[in-house]
Amino acid sequence: MRRHRTPIFHFILRSVKNPATADEILQDAWLRMIQGAREFQRASRFTTWAYTVARNLCIDHARKAVHRRHPSLDQSRDDDGATLGDSVAANDPGADRNAIGHQLQRSLVVAIESLPGDQREVFVLREYSHMSFKEIADVVGAPENTVKSRMRYALERLQSSLVEYEDYARTLG
Amino acid sequence: MDCETCNDLLLDLHYDELDAARAAEVRAHLDGCDECRAASEGLGRTRVLASKLSLPDAPVHSAAVMAALTSTAPVTAAVSGRVSAVIPIERAREARSVGWLQRVGELAMRRQVAMVAISLLMVGLGLRYLPFRSPTQSVTTEMAQPEVIPATELAPTPEPAPTPAAAPANSMRSRAPVARPVAPAEGRVQAHAARAQNVDAVRGADLGSGSASGRSARPLGNASSAGLARSAPLSEAEAVAADPPAPVAAAAPGSRGGYAQVPADEERQLQAAMPAAPAPAPSSWSSARASAESASSRGDLSNAIANYQRALALDPPPAERQAIALALHRALNSAGRGEEANRVRAQYLTPAADPAALAGQVPSSAPRTQTGAGMVQPSAPRPAATRPARRSNSNVQTDFNQSAY
Image (cartoon, rainbow over all chains, first blue to last red; front, side, top):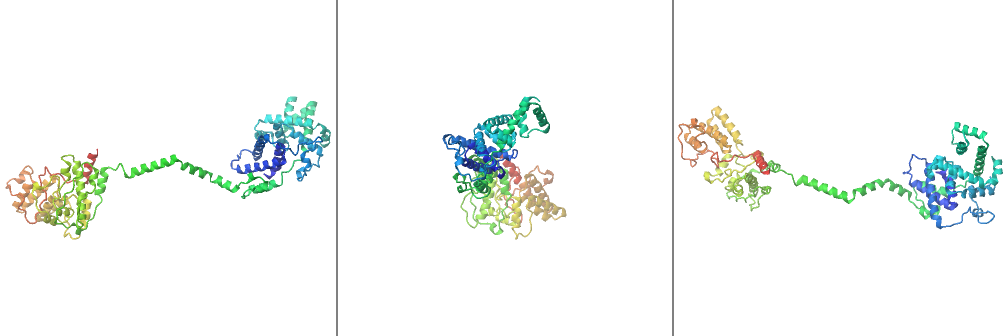
C-alpha cells in the first residue's frame, strides 16, 4: 500500500483537482481496502483493485460535487494564469518544481485537467501509474482497444496543448 | 506493414507492450515512412513533457492514518480531521469473524425452524410413550415383572375379601387397580390379588362369550383363598387346610377354584421367598407328574399317589388331567385303595377314558364328602370338558392378539 500511495494520490488529485479532497478520498480508499481485504479476489492484481476503489470514490465525489462549487487550488483565478495553489505555501516535497519551470508545470496540470474524464484517467493510469492497457481496461471497465483509443486521443490533445514546449521537449529528449 | 497497422501499434511500441519481433517490424516501417515516423516522434515528445510533471507526494498525515488503519486501535477523527474516519477496526474484524456464527444463529432462531423442532419433539415423545404400545407387550411386560411378597404378608386372614368391581370389557383400562377400601394389614396381599383379578378380568372380557361382568367379576371366595393365591403352589398343605372343600356347583364360571393365577416367574420368586417351606414341592403339574411317574417306576406307590394328586391339584389341562387321573386311579388300585380310586374315577374319568382299565370297578356315588386326611382335593373340580384350561402367558398373548385384531 505504501508503494501505491503516491500514484493513487496523484490519480485522485488529477480527478478531483483538490489536494484536500484527494487526501480524504485517499483515506476512504484505504479504509475500503482494509475492510474489504477478505473479499479481495486474488485472481486480480492488488493494483487493479486499489485503483478501482479509488476511481469509484472519485466518481462518488464528482456526483456529490455537482451542487458544490469550490475553487480549485490548481484553477486559474486571474488573467496571469496563477492558480490558487500558487498562492499557498507549498510545504510538501511534491511541490518541488525546480526540475522544470513553473510554467511547464502549470501548463501540464492545466492540459491534463482539461482532458475529458475518460481520457484523463486512462492517461494518468498509463503515464504515471505505469499500468498496462489491459489493467487499465479492468479498472475503467472498458475494452482494451477503447482504452488505447482514449490514450491516443489524450496524447494528441496534450500535444496540441503543449505545442509551445516542443522545442523544450526536443532539448530534453 | 501498412501505415494504419503501424499507427495502431505506436502506443504499444512507446509503452513497450510489443514483443521484440513485432516491435522490430514497427521500427522498420517507421524507418521507411516519414508520416508514421513524425507521428511517433510527436507521441514521444508529449510523453517526455508529461514525464516532467512532478507527482505530488501524498500528504504526510496519510501515513499516520495508514498506520492507524493497519493497527488494532480505532482510527480517530483527529488523525484526518474527519468524523467519518472513526472506525473500530478490531471490532470490524471480530464482526467479520463471527459473521457466519450470527448467520447460523439467525437461521436457527427463525420461527419456522422452531416450529419444526417442536413438532419433531412432540412426535418423538408420542412415539416413545403414547401410541403403538401393543396390548401383548403391555400385558406381558406387566406379568413379567414379578413382585416378591414376604411370607409374613401371605398369611391367610379370616376376613372375606371384597368382591372386585367389574372390569370394563375390552378396555385396557381394566388393568388399572380397582379402588376399594383395604385394610392396612392386608393391603398388600389384596392389592396383589386385585392385580391378578384385573388381569384375569381382561382375559375373561376378551374371550368374547357371555357377559363381561359375569366373567370379570370372579369371586375369590374368601380372604384366605386370596391370601393363599401365592402360597398355594409352595405349601400345599396350607392351601388344603385353609381352603375348605366347596361343592362343585359353588365354583363360579371362569374361576380357578379360588386360586388366583400367578405367573411362573412370580411363583418362582415367591417360592424363593418362602424359606419356611419344608420340602420343595413341584411347582407345576408336569413336574409333579414326572415325580409321580418316577416314583411309580421305583415302586414307591405312596409317593407316586401323592405326586399324582398334587399334579391334579395344580390344575393341568383337561387331556392331561384325565391321563393323570387315570394313572392315579391305577396307582390307587395297585395300592389297594379302591375306595379312593373310585372317587378319582367318579371325579375325573369319564367312562370312555379307559374302559379296559375301569372295567370291574364299582362306581361310587359318594363324591367329595369323604375326603381322607392327606388327600389333596382340588378346590374347583369340574368336568374336564367344561373346565377351561389354565392359561399361560402365551395364552394371554394369543387372546389379546385376537382381540386386538
